[in-house]
Each structure stands twice: as structure tokens, then as C-alpha cells.
Image: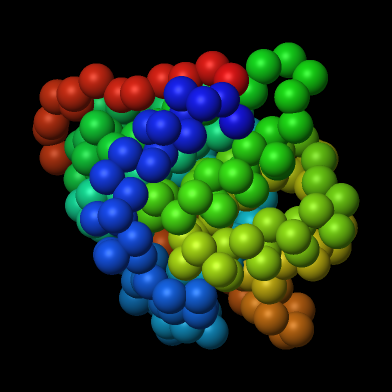
Length: 220
């Protein structure tokens, strides 16, 4: 991770440290009562990693996490997006209540280890969420990331395309999402040691018309 990125993530670190949860797993509502009802903490696991498998359609993977991102962006902590395959649709994010001025786009240079950047962003403790789009990740690396997320209290999200996602994962929470004109289909594939598949149909999140401000972008 570059010095510039570390300095930006550490900006006002004392304030963020005071706001950050302790080293434990906590729940944050997903914004969907049906989904909250089937997740162990009654929502997304803060201080943990969540794996979300998607088809690769434009912006599909973000639909499911928009309500939580909107909430976390208002805690005055960073939302770090590491190696997104395309630029996030800022107008769409802002329309769903995400404070995009808290969004930090990180593009690792060619040949750089994106998961190492994820670990450092989690470790610094100034991010409410660290979102990443890794192409690969061995179980040992993922377990290390899980430990780092636990100690930082941040929410780590790994988005994996269905065609390249492994059949199994060491992460405690794993879901698959597909979108349609009438809503989201969410399959909860894994919750802790429970691998019983649960399928849900959820409405698309509502939006409002907002013009977003600028977003910070860094190469490292």
C-alpha cells in the first residue's frame, strides 16, 4: 500500500478509532428484514468477511449491499473499494444514500497483490467497509484476512464472479445474488458451519435523485 493511501486512510485516525467497534463480530442490518432473519447476527457481520458471488452483470453485486453502505458512509469512516472491475456508478450509489465522498477507489498496479492491499486497509481500522473484487485467494490467505477483519471491526466483502468462485470457502458467510427487473434472488450458501441453502426473493433497493460529489481515487 502506498504512503499516500496510508496517510489518507489514517486521516483523523483518532476520531475513527473512537468510533470503531472492538475486536468482536457484530451485526449490521442488511436493510432487508427477510435476509436479516436468516443471518446469524441478524445482519451483515462487522468484524468479519462476507463473500458474495455474482454473475458479473454491471453493478449487480452492489445492489445487495447498498443499504448497509449508506449507513456505514454516514459514520465518517472510509468505504474502500479495491480493484473494482469497473468504476462504481456514483450517481446510483448517491441515489441510494451512500455518501460517496467517503468512497475510496484503490487500483493496485499490475502484478500487485490485491488481497495484501485488502489486509492493510482492514488493519488500519479507519474503514467502515473494505470491498474487494479478487480473482483468486487461497484458504490460508482468506483466513488471515478474516482474523484481520475481526481485530479491526471492519466489514470486509469479497465479490467473486460465479464462473471463477471456488466450490468451497473458509469464510463463515457466503451468498450468491442475481438481479432481475422485479428484484434480487439471494441464495445463502453458508452460515458458519451450516451449509443448508436458503433462497430469498428481495425487492430492489429504492433510490432518490441526487448529484454525487467527487470521489477519491488512488493508484498504488
